[in-house]
Length: 295
Image (cartoon, rainbow, N blue to C red; front, side, top):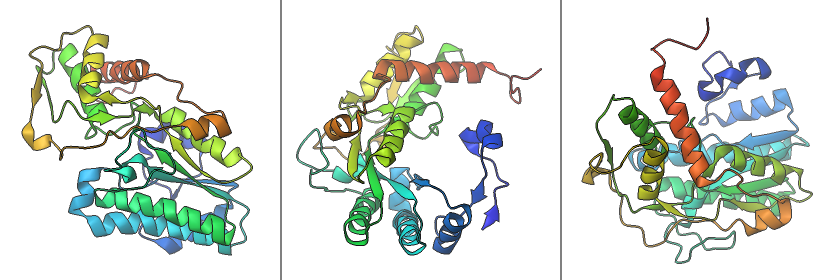
């Protein structure tokens, strides 16, 4: 295990509140040592290569990183006598061609890519260790959870960043793929509150963490442009190479169990989430390069 000397990315502002330890997801022994050394009460395992198209380019690495790291943490909590409670992040993408929408915890999974297959495996591993080995492990079946920290290759941030650039006169149009694709978008902070609540509950369970409402990419685009005070017409181009295969089922989650058992719901609505992201990118693009806002 290496000391945490690297950057913390979007969490850099929390550095003074954290003890960082760098561990490679492909290094199961390093993961186990990190748990043993820090002896946490709660473990939130969120790390994964999460850009779905990349999972087709590097399927072996994707599956090894996601499933291997989860198995290592489950093993350490079980074998190390740790009292830790473990949260592992599943994904609504595991439902794939599920044949029903919205999806619930008991909806049969039909994953359509290596990332989704691995996330389905995470959920199955959590269930096996929970039921057969007595490990307290809850799995959050998280749908698209967004914020201004989202990398720019994801469509939500591509839209918020692109609209901000157009509003500031730095770009003329936004290029996207399928405008009719449907997603269930929630605020990342709400999803993490659900993760925390799942470990405060008396029993480990699976929970769908989603808003329960689907929106198209076109809805996202129109909301972002409207918040920036711009008209959409003539400012959006469709690049066919960015389109994914047509989807037969809308990936929308049913958060009823989380609402009834944990008292959880997605509190920041879709329009407010889009506005938050656009406002961040407007501020960020206005700042000169290298300006951190200090005096």
